[in-house]
Amino acid sequence: MASRKPVKLWAANTAAEAMALAREAVEKLLPTVGRLRPAVVFDVDETMLLNHQDEETHPDHVAVNPEVKAFYDWLVERDVDVYVVTARRKSDWSRRYLTAQLRSLGYDNVKKHYMVTREYDGDPSASRFKRDARRRITEKHGSRVILNVGDQSSDLFLVDPYSPTNARVAQSLDPQRYYGFAPNDGVSMVGI
Image (cartoon, rainbow, N blue to C red; front, side, top):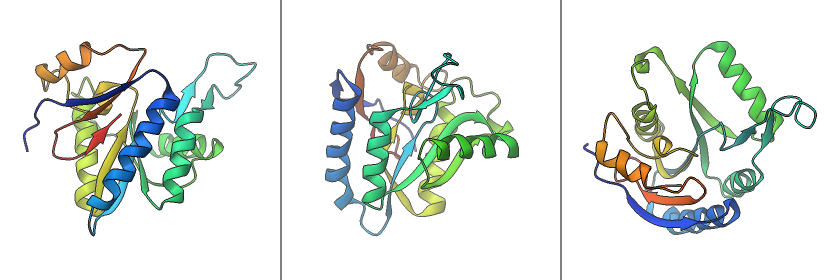
C-alpha cells in the first residue's frame, strides 16, 4: 500500500500537552477498531526512556520519561495492547537488556518488542523497518495500531530515502515542539 503525505493534526509545546492530546486521540479512536485489538506502538530511546550522561543522578544512564510513562499506564488500565518498535539491533542479549531496562522503569506490560534485524541493514532512517513492524503487528496479532509514539519523524512515517515528500515535512518541524500526524501509511491511524 503506497504512502501518502502525512497530515499534521496538531502541535503542542510540552510533553504533558502532547500526551493529553494523545489520550484524546485514543479515546476517539478506540470505538473504531471493531473486533481488532487496539494497539499503541512506542519507540524506546528518548521516548519511553531518557538516556542520560550524568552518572551521579542516573547511574544506569537511563531515566523514565514521566509524561510517556503516565500515558503508558493510562493505556494499560484501558486494556490497550502496547508494543515496542525500536531501531536497536536485535540479538538475544539486546532483547534481554531492553526488557530489563523497561521493567526497571515500570514498563511491565509490553506485548512484544520489535528490533532491527539484518534484513534492514540498508535502512538508513529505520523508517521502513518501523513501518513494516507496525504492519506485522496488524497482520500477525490482529491489532489495529491506533497510535504510534516516537521522538523522530522516522518513528511515525517513511522518510528519506523512501519518501522525499515526507522528508520535507519532517524537515519543516520545530524540534522543540510535539506534533500529531495522520501518517497516511495504511498502518497507523495517528502518530505523535
